[in-house]
Image 1 (spheres, rainbow, N blue to C red):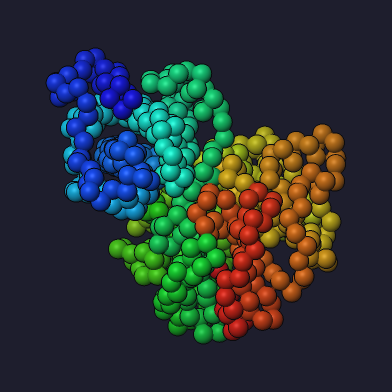
Image 2: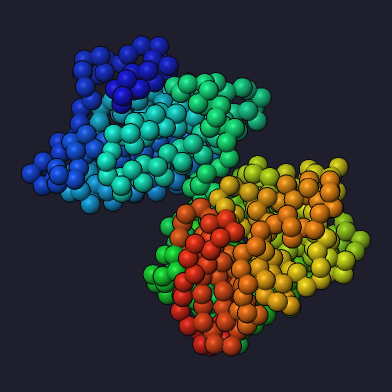
Length: 532
């Protein structure tokens, strides 16, 4: 299958079979260390395929990194980060089964398999022609991966290998959807290059399977491992601390002293402002209005360090942070006490590249309560709630433009005063934002898993929103929701709880509205530590 697909790909790109492939009946392969291979558990085919997939994922990563440098389109840099994760998962299996790693040189374009090396050259040549050609190259690579991975899954008997391939396959389908979406934005229809057209249509029409995490940035992921971490700041000493998380396990705990000298400086947002796959921190001085971005590499300042933004009047408050224009760099949504809203679009060390007015709300009771991508267009949106009448409103954003409700947003629901929004995230991994509710009277936890569906149903029927949502849990009020994040890297948001008197930290690892696991994290008895 590998040989056949590579030949078809070469023909599609060049119109002929390259000489290196015409002269070889089979793929050149790295020798397998058969003396150390556990042949009772791993077949020679499985070993060969692991080695091949390791290099095929490297080919994809290298092509995307090269095309990002050429076209500066973040779809390439985002998916390149995902391909690195795919490479790493194959490397772990190669090590587990004591095979020889074909990646002996990590540099871009270095491939041992001659057919993959030739394919790389052809793909780069085509991708240099235009952005559209580059996007078609990306889609072609993902079609190839899908075919090869499905073949590998069908022929593998090992559970760990099959699970790894299934994860890569979901990622490749997500990547294909992303490339096709970008192609169609340019006004060009996309037709299958390798896959059957019916199979392609089924993939493109499906929903995101790995949540944003496979090729976007996971919230609060300071070390770029695809798993959310926990950022703490002490409310009296101003010390900072990060828990690097692996599920509910604290893999490392690191403190750092940034802005520890003044309580006026507070963290107003954690987000990826330079598109490097690692969360940065947004700081604001409540007394002066000064604003800084600390570009982070784990618990240390990254290259470029601190980026000073323009000082705004203290009447401007950070409503939230998110990628409102889909360029991979997160932006800042500001709300002024006078009702005016604006977005500052950022670009890493360049700071703010543009600040644009969104609209004005002439009711000071409206507050931003969440930022997430609710319509799965790759751009974050804004959820509002009115403190008095408890109405919930949604802005679907395209840059600084509100695209729904005739440019004014849309009403979501009314809820009772004792229900509050305690978080937004993607709890079922469908690539769309969900809303987490908590009842302040009885501790009940509820979830809206499809906000757009809730909007439509409520508008049509006026049904009690709690009937439309899903029950999560009953918890004592002494337990408080701190934040949400994808702590185990499965593409689904989880819930972090903290006991308000003992400092006990607890985690719900979620699958939709169902807590798959309820696990203790640790006890941090000093209640001065606050999750940011």
